[in-house]
Amino acid sequence: MKERIKKSNRYKRYLFYIKAFTAVYMVFVIGILIVTLPLLIEPTSLYNAKGALIAALTAVSLLYFPFIIAYIIKASRLIKNEAKYKKYTANIVKTETSTYIRRDYKIVTLNIPDLNKQYETKFYKGVLYDDVVKGAKCELLFNETNEADIIILDVT
Image 1 (cartoon, one colour):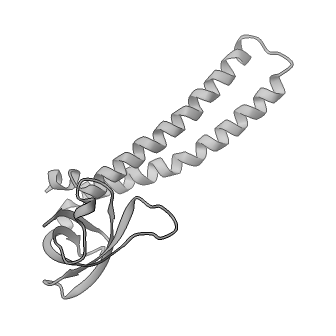
Image 2 (tube, rainbow, N blue to C red; image 1 turned 120 degrees about the vertical axis):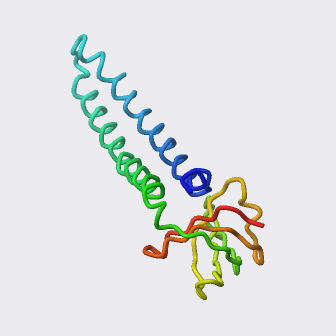
């Protein structure tokens, strides 16, 4: 089950977000180092201007850090809670994409016959993105303790 979760669209998207935010964070950290190293060698009259730049770069880089931590927690929770997931087959009732703002996911409404309920979940861009259409059947993992936690594994 753990391997199926690691191959899922949601887990891969979380890893992508972790890598993307970390890359941006590292750009700011390297920028801080480039600005700081000359100050350590020889303080000049530009000391105050560089200090303000260091403060600004530090503040901006710290804005990305919570997102990195949040997606690390989300990805690890998917793996940690693998015992809580049950496998179901569902029918895709409706798919919605954003009209005005370009997003990297579709909102999918699923009908799970075994539970006699409909649920909404996000399906991120990736391998099966174009296969997720109204009327298709999908294999999914459903966490009954957290009903918002649905992982679509395969679409037929």
